[in-house]
Length: 637
Ligand SMILES: [Zn+2]
Ligand SMILES: [Zn+2]
Image 1: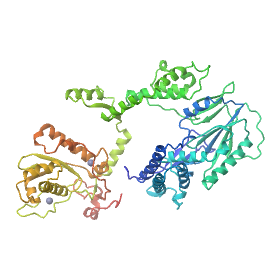
Image 2 (image 1 turned 90 degrees about the horizontal axis):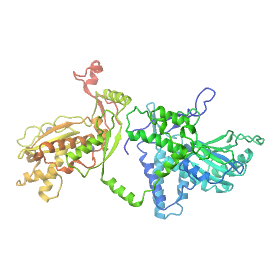
Image 3 (image 1 turned 180 degrees about the horizontal axis):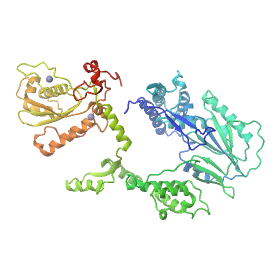
Image 4 (image 1 turned 120 degrees about the vertical axis):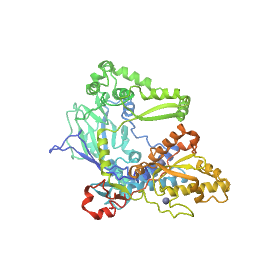
């Protein structure tokens, strides 16, 4: 659960489709499901998937994983224009139409042969999915909405587009529908489903009226299965231009359309008949589709620039049926649009474009299966590898991996196995956005992490504050110096400094009394104070001098808590490393304190605008009321 943010809905504009009479393109509302409850359905679906996979339940026999798999399967089946009819079977508004009750039926169907224990776990997983589906929240123009909120019954809610679990669950439901409607596919030589795009090849020549009747019967079976008519399928029948006579419609059905052109589009391929009436494939470009590839001038690694053309060529070759006629043609002859854009972007030169046969040989060679021995070795290497994730810049004179290996040699660190992984730097939009957020937050502070004045009750013979007046600072890196040895302990805390120190004091006492091991702080001070009968807080306070080395901004620091890039943890490591480098003999911390997971807990803030001071006159000047009491901006989030 990384984020508590509530996402806003997005509208996709499908500009690759035909515009309507007013010139508007079809749209689709996307409900992003990455809100803070999305962890539940994600866990739920992963649990179900693991159980099904562990028990080798085959739920993908009708699922088309990739366009190229479909092509490979069908190409060898001897399908010709004379002996078959191509039909695509599409689900309308697929994800939103898949209601929870249908998901449950599908999951129960595929787990019907499993043990009772497994079934019980699966039921729990289903509950988690149900919880997620029934509490998808959205924000739009300052208001919160519940997805499918008008449906009070969570059983009736649909899958969200973009949810982690949606794609897999939708495929599972598709497999369930196809597995339970087999009687309708007795006369097909192939049928499969990719998400909401179904595809079937019927044996023999079918006409429009027959397909209409077939669809009606199929739909009836689906309705029975789904216990309702919310999941609707449409058909599109491929009749190529050579068929001159279309039999008269008995009834025109809006659910069945006819695709009358030389080619039949499916996924990102188009299917067409060769002169000898064989079924063949090539890559399909949707009308209005704009191809865009990275420009050579942009800031990316060379590996990245190389991967793009090789990926594009590989895909073009994989999705193209090889014939006598095209096998020696270069890919720029077969797909001028793709290759022109690649050359314009500077990613390939004209000479580098392979022929179809060359590219296929290349990709076949690439596919060498790794042996188990190799895989094991790789796995072992992976465990020892150290990943360096740095921002990539073209401005470097020496590539960063060379800098690292130089340092590795210089400091004699042969055990480091370097692996590079690059991230990009912020772009201009993000820099502006960051600047804006910074300015908006200038006067805002967190009530819960504010630095407060000392409220200590001094002990006997003590000055007012035993903590050098930093007792109620929070989100800090602090330094505790031992008055006897002048050695230094560096620590961090998100709580009030005083609270953290009291934990330290307790640890010292426990170690001195019972010998229970704890951290380096307790070890050092228990040894220092071993001759005292009563190691009281006051005694310990008098043995140390504390100060703040670094103070974090609560608003930005809290956001990183619990993540691998927690600023408080990172800052502490830097300070410990600094000291261990320059004055190692003075360091109390042990080395194992510079790694380990972050244990800071993110919290919601109660925001307040800062008290008006001379440095920030601004709008505050006019109203004295606001200056006196911090104005609450928001009580919760
Ligand atoms: Zn104090
Ligand atoms: Zn942390």
